[in-house]
Image (cartoon, rainbow, N blue to C red; front, top):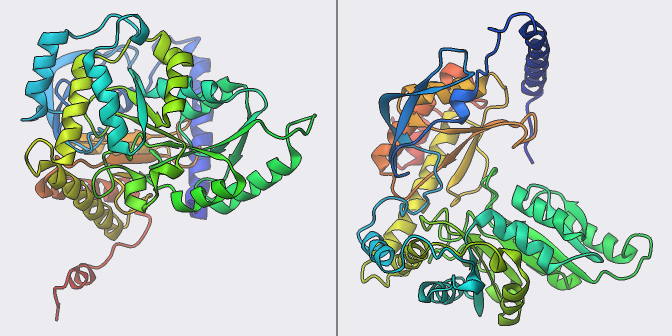
Length: 467
């Protein structure tokens, strides 16, 4: 739970009120003067990238001569430190093991199957990939899809329908929300990452039964995420598993941001928190973050996966995942597990954990309000005030550090933030540069909401005695 300082909340509300009033005034004058048309945030939320999303990438400069009504690309390209991509293990750029195998698969299978899975779109790579994913996450079987978002939105309506109950974390991703709404099941929400409230909701709903008829629910599914992408928090999975066992509810775990990124062997929050995967009924994840590819998967029992293959529209009607993309996933998993004959996978896992904990700790010492837990590579820096959103983004970009800012409606009105994503591809020098820039910009914009830790205290905390 985020506790917003009273003065910060007051000034944020005032700023939004001022923006609303100014917007109304601008719309009025726009009817009279056509030149009064200006979207001042376009340059913050839409910046073209012209390179792979590695630790550093190329950002294209765009200009506007009509107050952002149109933006034109220039020939200027800035090399920026990338703090916005989900490239957790650094596989999104060329890799000495993965890339040659992807190129070979492109030559053999071409770029697309041009077909659904059931109409000729299943190659030997797809069958091998599903077996590889199932073994990696620790489930009997798996099915893969070409799009991560569609994995959630298309699977949930197949798993449950009218007469069923979905209990969803209040901060679950939009793909889960849309999938739940499309299922026709009754939806209830529990307080974010609060097992005690989940138990209260479960107990009440089981006692009440279905609306109007009060019959027992046909099925109850509790949906949570491994790492919450806007908060950087780890799911309290052991407690939630215990509650679901007690009330005989199914668990649906979305590991889009945790699979590959956390855990000693990179197998996600179950690996990190010591949860037996046999206790998770449906395991979902994506390949767009840690594996440098695209698509998503569902892993579970063989009966569940066979049912999905015969009933899920994302499997029956959508184009199958690209063969080179499938090869990239398998190759990156082999690197993570050390099956490439090197220790690079273990080194990547150790580096992302060290990088994430170092960066989070340093930000907190500087006085920033940072959300999330240790070991999570996602760390939101709270900005709150709407005027500070574009200012923080632009000032970082001026110093060749690219950050992502997020505001309403993607977050609650008062909780605007800059979301930092750390990668194993970042060196300690990269992170030190980023911290210097963010600290300078934080002072300039005024988003250090806590007193900075004195340098003497920092050094002594690292074991260096200061007299």
